[in-house]
Image 1 (cartoon, rainbow, N blue to C red):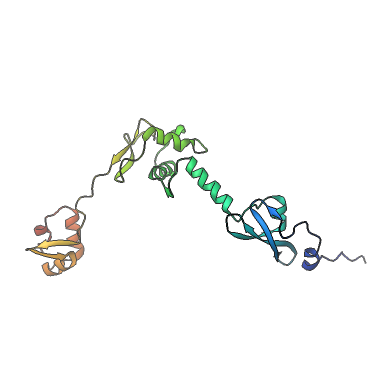
Image 2 (cartoon, rainbow, N blue to C red):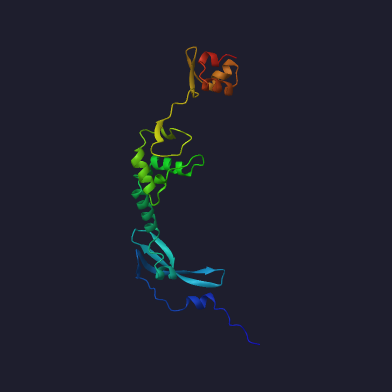
Length: 213
């Protein structure tokens, strides 16, 4: 009977010659020392190398990823490219996502209305066109609306509109016969439920009427 060839052990695989050595550079990474090998279910292994990154970070990278050029940094290159794309598309102001970008994303992914092709262009062109057509959001109180809800989002049918203040938002403190007190205390003193008082104030009732049992 012919025996099958024995599978090489992890030790025999990692002991083979390597073209990587401490001091070698791969992109932003400089190899400093060999680390523990990468094992997958004990079937094979790959050499791994501890590396210092030019940005000040560090990483442990498989040898094949270094040699193929798949990994060239500790992750900082990927992060920089992401920030660059966001900035190039106008999605960020400083380190914060622009409210216009959030509104554009919500519009695109909404389920209740169609969006014109101009604002759906790929590679950031859609957002640039959207911002050029509507301009920045005037204030945090403005929201994106369609003038005619039956028509899709288009430059002529979309606008920033200031949201009206919510009428009758319950207040934390109210004045009852010259005394300032919390809503809960006022409700208990009047002999009504706290939730009832809140609902009445939300509907625009006067304080006197809202506290009437």
